Image (cartoon, rainbow over all chains, first blue to last red):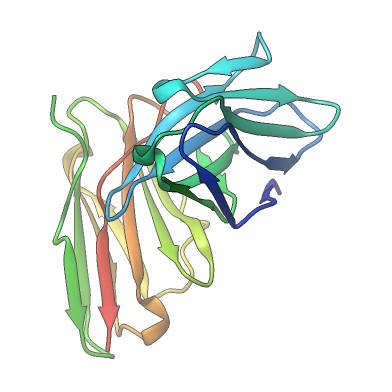
Length: 112
Length: 115
């Protein structure tokens, strides 16, 4: 079975600072990887996904992630965060062609 | 266009009662998924429907949980004899078809509280 580990449960950063949210997955086969964001009292919204090809994936709201097969990682980055980026972020891997297996989530808090 | 909708948005019930949660997927999406988000377990897959194929029920936690999808569109998740550990946010998602190239779009969820 697949598993996803998000190494930080909470990440506080100051506004306009860069941020990296870490994600590692366990798999010995090709993977499809995703980052979703959940704003307070809302559902999940797709930020970006890696299916194949270029290991650097760009998503919405200025986020990007890099797929690293040797380190089985898919870390999410943003060079300069805004107050509106305050949310919970979930890394996920697709398992069995249809099920998303999620990490425990990272709560990103932006301080002014 | 309209996204995935779920109803009710909140449901409070007493232990032992049955509840039904509804999901309306995006029009034209053939795949539909139910997930559960709880403090203790995080986000977990429950069940998946694809067209007229038999659903994948491998994530249902007990036989008190069941789901159906009528006419390939609306889905209902039913929890019988609810327990306090069933308290969670139940999320529905749909996609154009199954497979990783098809993004799963999530609804806002139904927050279930079992007293």
